[in-house]
Length: 290
Image 1 (cartoon, rainbow, N blue to C red):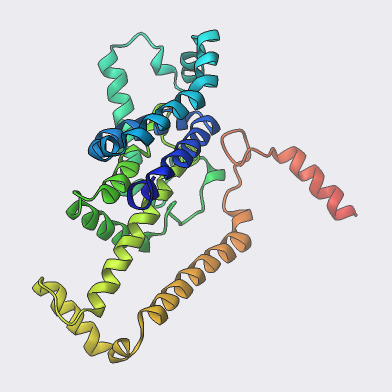
Image 2: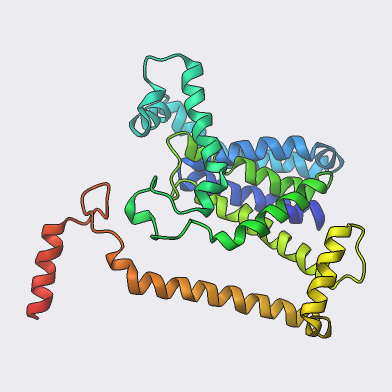
């Protein structure tokens, strides 16, 4: 979609196909892609109008992509509510609509909360957690916040608005049932983009010889004083060094998971690790015997 905005309007067609793939892949994707599409339509309406011929063809492609879903809903009109009520019974409960919406938005805000993503939690199932880790590394939080501030400052740019829209919409599908990392995993996409924007902004500050913001300028001068070698390095070398650092962090996390993961949690029933202790121990006996 960003290539549709910035390179060639014809990229609208593959973006719609990819959107349909998300829509049909997993039930939270239906609301996720629906809301994203509505917000992007409103956000970039002048651009769509300027490219109305391609936009109209895109609308016809969208109708074709939606046809299987519309036929299915026509033949099974109650299936969506039935599926939803099996996962979150409160949608069919005899309570006021405002209470249902309150429950939904409470989950939605929790899905946006940095505390859920960057701090270890006990809400998710044991098998979806790494003990002592948040779902996203805590060291990414300053970069994501920096990228968020930068995107808000450049809100008039369609590309930055698109990234902010993905952030706002990300928990919407998962909140229908309840925030869980497998349902809300799409949050990783805008978080990664915003973290990259924040990192790029930080490197830009460190490379500048002057800065309008006095605090940032003092920060740059302090780093230059402590790390004089920094200014002898090219942007490519600095970027490669940052990549290596992040790669080592990932490898360290992988090593920890492989070494300590098997004994992090020992609760084996349905809502724990799920693999029952009796079958597991039976297989272990056979393995040891062999």
